[in-house]
Image (cartoon, rainbow, N blue to C red; front, side):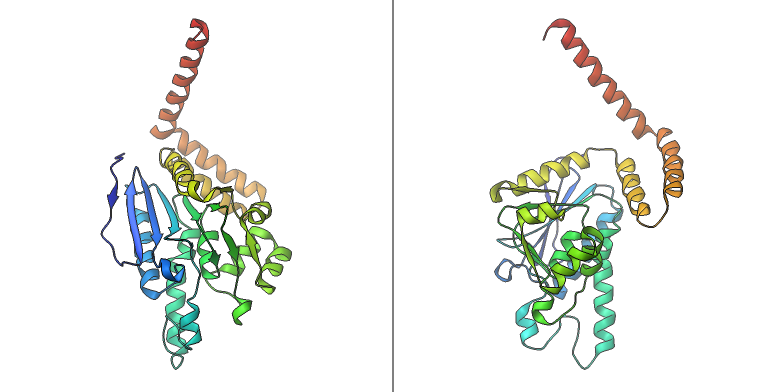
Amino acid sequence: MSSQRQVLTADSDELQAELESGVLLLRLNRPRARNALTLEMLEALASRLAWAQTDPAVRVVVLTGAGAGFCAGGDIKVMAAGRSIYGTSEEPEQRTRRQIEVQRATSVALWHFGKPTVALINGPAVGAGLALALACDLRYAAASSTLGSGFAAVGLAGDFGCTWLLNRLLGPARAKEMLLFAQSLDARRSLDWGLVNDVFDDDRLLAEGLARARRLAEGPQTALGAIKEHIARADREDLATCADAEVRRHVQLMAGEEHRAAVRRLLGGISSAESQVRTGR
């Protein structure tokens, strides 16, 4: 696996992409607007995710924002002008169809992604921006960041799957509280509520998050994908069905070289440790 850093050709200036050691870093890039979403940005993100899903050079996807924000969601200035990035008010069916396509190719795609995904929340994550973060497998937050629904504050109910994601991650009581009051949580409370996995000082977030992503990229990819499958199945099937599926994948994985190589590395580490104990090192 190459460790050379590659800055990838941009589909849009509003999304930066670079690949290093199997980790694809995607950075939303409208810092002056706190990375509020545009159709151009979302289409570029959708394109990169579709490519990353199938390209073996990509083993982990990391999503973050440029500047001081993760993603402010919908652009308030566009809303104030009575416009939508998906089409005109005279064409509601077209707007609906276009937004559904974009959501499925971004937040829904992240939720179902076959490889590990990590959100590094470096500032406010609001509305649809919050949904993009919640759709990732792991979320790490800067100490100064905030997570907010924001929808009710502008007379909306939610999009990009945010209501589903909050209900799934928090349960209905806390999801309703966060959505009905357009509540914003600081990083520590987000950690307490289970919305993020850990909180780091602002200047350490990127380094800490990428270090974890590299560990995932170095791990057994087929097994990591299977773990994601098992967890997804657990949301819709009973214990016996899930346990049976675990056995079938277990047998498949044990027959593979990835498993055998991992065992050899583990035994090598144990032998090295025992040798050091015997020699007093």
